[in-house]
Length: 317
Image (cartoon, rainbow, N blue to C red; front, side, top):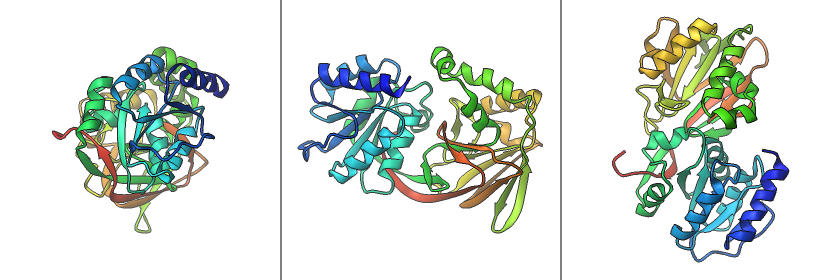
């Protein structure tokens, strides 16, 4: 969806649903209710869900984004305006932007899953239904999770450099909207036949692994119900790292199958380890993604800030 189209939807939502603030330029008065909901109007079924949200959100201020990067700007302003809870209503990309707007500020993050996959919500056990997810927010059970970063850009679930980031880069937005998660498989087939980059992973000043692509996790799941980082815990103060040596079509299919069954980290051509900090270098410039969104390129410095992010999640997780 173009920025202009997203802006038009945002203005339409504001016109038809009272209390919705469109765009990043409007300044809200200091709210009586300290909850701010930032919704991506390009998310699937956003308009219908927003109408429902207005009925159950009990006076929370709702702000609709107008394009890429606006959720981060909205979250930054919400922090400045004194909101205590900032809710990301959208997919993993919207969550990532809101988290980068919050940073390490002493506010609490809420999640209303409205994206294609919603991996972070899956990780936390947040239900995908709007009413059920809102009940989690109202219950106010808070978890303090680790806040990971790649070149000073925060991420909550995972980041990738090399093959998987190239797939994100080349995946067509129209195809993604039509096919959902299956669009990534089609693009992965195309990318897998290209010449792979050579990556080097460095910790404590020495090279510890080499491969064609690297995934760094702050939780168990990658791309959906794929348990790549099987032993990962978002409260353990560590980054979980998978270095893959293969990138040909046969290897990629094998890795996906292994991820589905939670065994990929044990493959002979995959190195799995944990670290608090690491650097990834490449023989050429390769893309970097975080939480499914492109954020830069190599080289990349990864770090972890233990339990710096407060998130509302079900008490049972």
